[in-house]
Amino acid sequence: MRLASCLALLWALGAGCQPRSAAAGDDPNRAPVIGNVSFNPAKFVRACEPVEICVSASDPDGDPLTVAWQRLDEAAPLDGPTVTRSDASGNTLTECARFLPRRAAAYQLEVRVSDTPPRRRGVVLRDSLKFPLYAAEGTRPCP
Image (tube, rainbow, N blue to C red; front, side):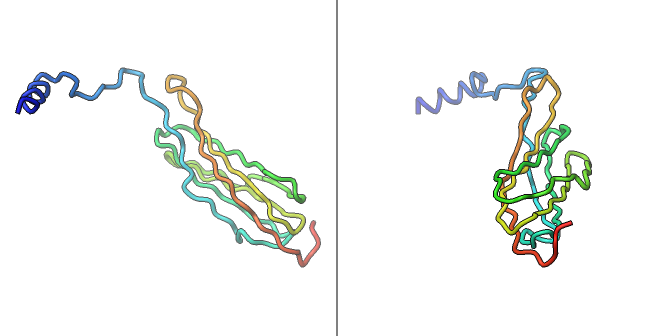
């Protein structure tokens, strides 16, 4: 019973029971989130057949976003990325890039999405996703 009385008194006085309120300008930056990666025509293609890969990401703070595409291996020649489309709407960005696998191989790629927060909110944060792109033997020569 004593513990309950003490807790009730602390609650009534507000001693340590209130959450810390954020000071003005103490608005922490939150990382962007990759929501979707799509492949057109597919993740499985033939050598010398172009593929368009699109990433959609959003930022919970509404910060501007940038996309970086990277190849993680050097197993076989791969042309790209060539950005074909970049659409920003609200806090969401969709960017598409064209790749052309020149040989049959399993290519390892990564896409990174970074935000650009106002200086008052601190450092740039990012989300990334690693994924494969598979190319089988082609039926036509590469351009």
